[in-house]
Image (tube, rainbow, N blue to C red; front, side, top):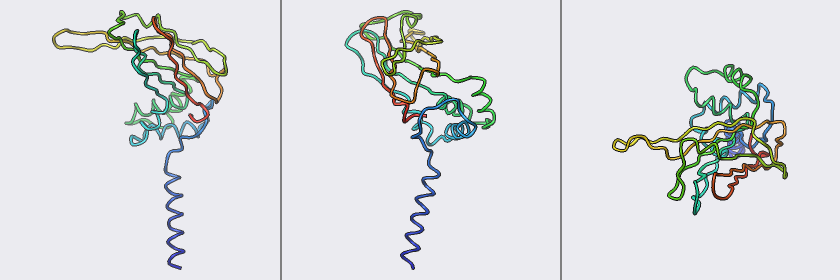
Length: 204
């Protein structure tokens, strides 16, 4: 009987851990129901696991031989956006507010690209306007519905402010995006196009 009790305790413990661990391996979908929004909200509030969850939506890339450095590409689904927004409001922010913010924001696929200057390429503050960002899925190219940018500026006590690159923020309609492998294509002002592949069948 002692052995049986110990085995039962081990099984119950494993089930409890599984229930308490955030379930990340669910497919991308939209629109989000109340239950999905609530789960995304609580992932964002979980300071221990939120970075682990969001890390799967970002890829870092190597420095090219020439041209600007497309350093980081991040894709954000409607679910991930709820998580991100929740993580940014950890004090006095409720699941009800998260749901209201989601409905106000609407369903979009958001892409953020970080591009840095290199010894072989240095542009001005508006160089990001010459960067093209698109989505490719099953051979189909999808154009952006919204594009904006923001220079990345560092402050040096001696040299003052210095632009070292830019963020490019791009949005796409969710209507043509399926729960499948998808590529983000970034074409810099000079140099070869850069691609980052994400599997939306394993990302929310």
